[in-house]
Each structure stands twice: as structure tokens, then as C-alpha cells.
Image (cartoon, rainbow, N blue to C red; front, side, top):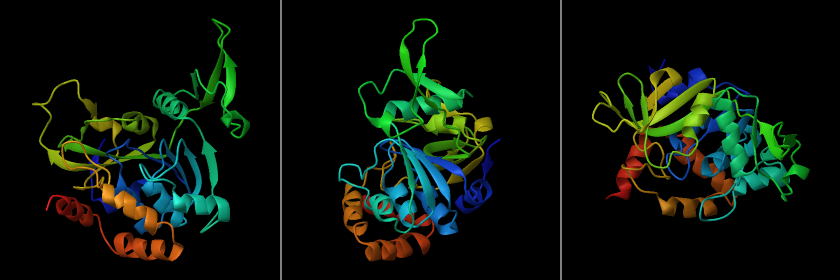
Length: 283
């Protein structure tokens, strides 16, 4: 059953050293505020799962909290490389990390399988691709009905899923609007979940019944964090801060500049800064 907490409490109760954690959100609703709280609390030795690792994983890797990343496509969206991730892979700074690379299709299917309680995902994929040669988790299976050779990958079953959404009701149901990505599947596949939201409303009675709603019994903790997806956007609330993504490319290119930025903007700041940043976009 969903519990309403501060972000600090939600992270402290649900994330543990050595956990496997999925921070999901596709294009928008990326849970930046929650990731920053994990960094402030110094919860490390994490295995991170994400379809498109971007700035939040670059920051967590650069702060030395990550031992392994399971992913498909890693980059600063619309800009280029994840420089802290590359530094960890190539130079072991601040620590070496293990990487397990998949296609988008494999990641999405692995979340679906985890949400369904299945041990693996079976799908058409990886034909003619070279990832099978470097990722032993990609296997082949023969369909017992047609004889067709299909790809198989382990299901994603994270210890914790972390997402951002538009609204939560007083009962603890969560509304996700716009591009939903795999947020729903990640929460259903996980043992525990932390959901940050823009606002808490009485109920969803006046909303269309076919909207994507996570019922309260699928969610562990809810924290209200206005602006909690910045610099990504939240559909219906604020736009993407493109300048922040361009700025990150320069910040992350230098170890000292990165370390100083993280201290000033993450370690020494709380989640309230996200609302301030979003307000600044519209002034």
C-alpha cells in the first residue's frame, strides 16, 4: 500500500546498499530529484537498470555509487556522450563499472516479463546484430510451435523502481500522462517503488478512465516533489530545459568541474530546488 512520505524518508526506507534499481522515464518524467536524494544519502554499490541512461546515471556513476549498468543506448539526449560513464568505463574513475548492453526492444520486453512474473522475455530480435557476441545474457530459444529461433533475455526484477509522475490521489493511486515509456512495467516488476509526483489531488473521478493509473497497492512510497523531473519535462506542467542538457556536456567533461557542480547543486541542496528551477524557466 502506498505511503506518503518526504523524499528523504522514501529513499532511506526503500533503497539499500547493493540494490538493483531502475530509474525510469522516457523523454519526460525522468526522476532527477529522486536520483539526487540517493546521491545525497550516499547509497552505493548499485546495479542500475535503464532503457536510456542519461544525466542522472552519469551523475550517480561520477559520484562512485554504481558498480553495474544494464542498459540500451547511453547518452546525453540531443547532445552526445555521457562523459562520466565513459570515464568510468575507460579509466575506472572514480571506480570501474560493469556494463550489460541490450537493445531497446530487449529492455522493454524484459520489463514486461518482470511485471508478469516470468523468468525471461522471448521476442524477435538481435538478428544480424553483434551484441550477442559481447553479452552472454542474450540467448536463443526455439519456438515449440513453429520451430522459429527467437531471442531470450532475463526478466528485469529490480529491488526498487523509481519514477516521476503527474499526480497521486489521496488514496495513493498514481497518474502517468504523456509518453509512458516503461514506468508502469518497471513499478510492477519491482519489489519496492518510490514515486515522486508534481501534485497530490483528492481523487481521479473527473479524469478519463483509460488513463495510465498505477493503483495504490502497486506503489510503496509517494513523495510530492514539484519540478522533480527537471531538466527533463513533465507533460502538462513544464517544458524540457534544453540549456541544462547542453550545459551538462561542459560540466561533465572535467572531473574537477563535475565534482564542484555536484557539491553545489546536489549535495548542498534539497529537493525544493527543483521547483525553483522550473519556476525560473517561465520567468
